[in-house]
Image (cartoon, rainbow, N blue to C red; front, top):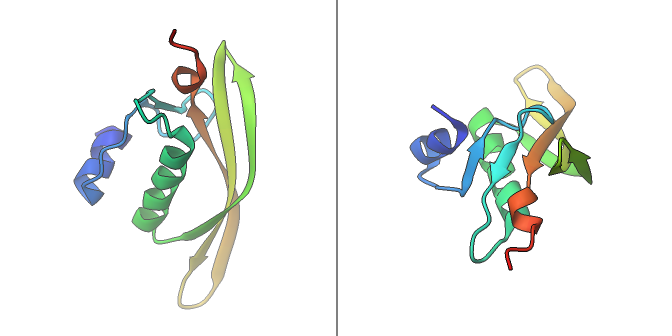
Length: 107
């Protein structure tokens, strides 16, 4: 199952995405341009559901627009917090979203 199918299966939400799981700049989550074109809202909603699925809390600590292989990549850096019965585990993760379709002028 790809990420879009997993989010539909686990949460009943369908995002306009395809591509990778966002774990590297070479495997970004590709966001399709829609009429509303709220790609930033889509990015944060995806992160919200990924956090719920993983049972973690997270917060944004940085965001940067990058050019990579003729694509526009939105890199979102988050700090995650996982609370276990014996410890609190924090780490920093990057998620990569290809937003080329959303920023290119269609007409």
